[in-house]
Image: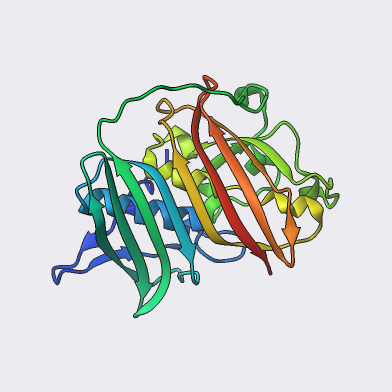
Length: 261
């Protein structure tokens, strides 16, 4: 079981009023940059640890530039409105005075209301029957060493034959079954290779990401995930995501705008 989550997402006071976060290469993507989901998870945890808020209901993050592994990032939490039902805060992430990302997130305490699910989880075989991609050539360093994946079949782009259908259905969980908390859901909506790669040899980077948080999965369970792209215009594309627990309940959903490099 990994020792790196949640440790790598915790910002600490440095004694002068600053909140700092070590930017590690343990969550790097194959592009050599820290994963945007890890950035979101770190900023979300910082808000939860250092502001008077409940559990997240929505977070929207805009990425200005990627942090560099080996640097120390500064995080600033600014309450916007700490209401009785909804608490909203901004979190800014910078390095050496250079702004890298801004997140606006809303939280709620002890809120209960009606629930009705009109969607359906992806139909995937039992994850225990599927191969570990790391056993058949998937890199073990960076992000892919921190998150486990199980797929019914290898994506076309990974074998040099893009399918033309930018949709991915996959089981995910933190390595070794580490418990998935609220920040981890923010990580997992952006932890898979982008499905737009099924349209050809394309490289994509997230510009803006919004996540809706519904509930937590049971500790140690796999999360059935579906990611899809339907619109590509002038080098920008959307990506919609849904995360479902192994009981068929939606735990989070997302939409991001990304740019092709």
